Image 1 (spheres, rainbow, N blue to C red):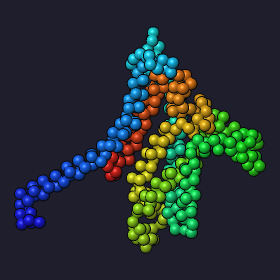
Image 2: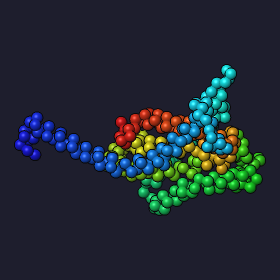
Image 3: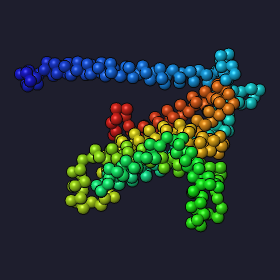
Image 4: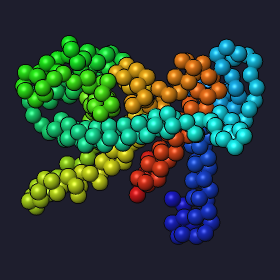
Length: 323
């Protein structure tokens, strides 16, 4: 350090600030240089299809005249003809699919967060065979969703499924249950299968956060005789909160976009139809590209809004800092 800097003169502080600013600008330029190719790829792979989807949602395009369509503005969303309202926002099936999707996301993500935390705490403890157990616990998550959904579909079959056979043998039910066809049990069945498959993902992310915690805090709590439950809620949970919120956001994104699991288990059933299944039905079954694109655009907006709300509620900044 120079003599001027050591004595704390204004010129010294100005020199230090100037050097720091130059270093910051250099780092920012280097960061943009490295991230620019990724942004370009994202713009091509994600941005362009999204823009085309939004554009088609403003037209009357269908699969029969995809090259000959007319711009109709927001009529796919909401339109008034002779005093009557039409469009996606007046369709009760759309709003039912929104409710099904939001309910599925809230219930499944909540259960997976609790179970994932419990599993992560168990796997974080020292016991023989811990490495093997960590590998085994990831098997449900590693199985492709379509494969696991089809597997559970057979297991839940009302005539040939092992679930009904086991419950009948135990005397818990008097007759086979059509788990995926009964409106009362269908959505809960989908939640159960999703929890079985995705809880390992939550456990993996939470376990990574647990392994980063300083052990001296727990040693001090043990010496002071603090109860383990109190340690978890007062020490562990606040420290893993940022990682936990990231895991919840990731799972919420997946849950709100759910398609394959519901489609394989219950097909186009109105009682379990998600927003993605609804959009697929309009686009493929009814060949309404404009209406299907409008549904897809609304899915994007709903997911973006809920993620922003979740991040704001958790006070998580994009930089990864939390307060």
